[in-house]
Image 1: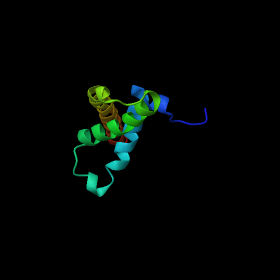
Image 2: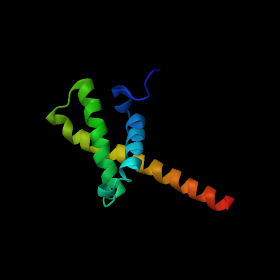
Image 3: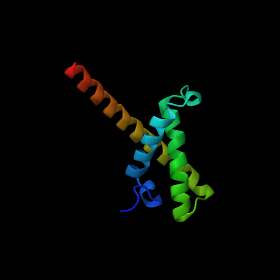
Image 4: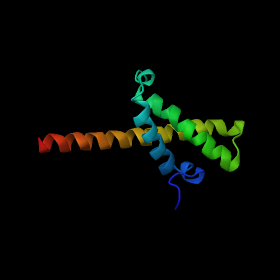
Length: 98
């Protein structure tokens, strides 16, 4: 495997959620985006990840927009949930060791 991300992997729930999670973590550090709730930011990023992944594979048509919105919500909730679990695990580990 020469690349970690391909349009095929970004079109899957796991790949899109992982990419969304990474991008949300970076985007939350940018001052203009800090005012947005994490869920809204994640949803926007999820759609931005999914749209080209689907578009470059099978073409993105107007009829696909409702599914893109729903899939974006699923990917965003998966990414935010993974971040929440990871952050709470990190917090518990650091409080036990200190």
